[in-house]
Image: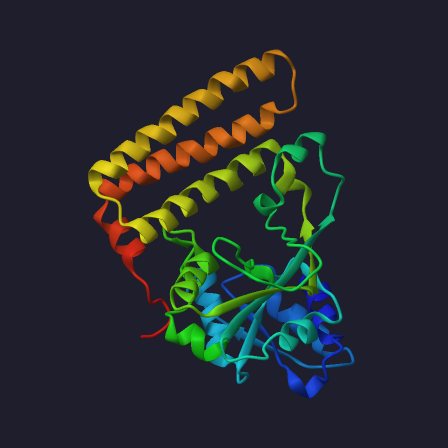
Length: 305
């Protein structure tokens, strides 16, 4: 997919001299450097390649930011195809110094037709986003997603960069949402524009029962992390919340047994909700006792120093 992603960015309507393309190889083992070399043999804009050996999405994003010479950073992923007007649409919304972040639509490009039971899942569970066909100023928790996300470079460094999604075995998990939380706290403006479109490839292994259980489990940890950052719950409140999510886990387990017996396809949704609530229950419990996790979650600056 990376070659298709790069070709879509090389063919932007924005004039070539107005932007640069940087690929950050974050310890991959799938010949990324060779793919970039092959794309650079084709006509059009040159792609810059850098290697960031420290694993982690936040490390890769920050390495790209340090390499960039532009004032505005636009992030996307290697499983995305960008509309030819993607960069122009993002750039057009930076007409005020108060506007520091702009995102756009993320539409699905299905590798295989989705199973019928996927209708029970909200699009955000697959990192798809569509806030409509008019430009809006976002309000928390309306967040642009990372594969269609732009930000002023100086603001990225001012606010401490992206939060990590994971550190070793610890799922931190609020990535660009953690950065956006700080943006909103500073009263900066975040804009959604429907003209900035990317198509996100939804691979077949992402829309299996196991794939959705895993995704919802990760989201559970991310949401508990974000809530703790916002509200700084006491150990007693964390214990209460952990039990609440445990009760929800039990509820969906019982309902899931009924759905399975009745052969309802909502069963797969129940299983994913079980994973979500189990993840939250365990994460909130760890926030009482795991000093390493507490320290990681409390950290706000991941890019400076």
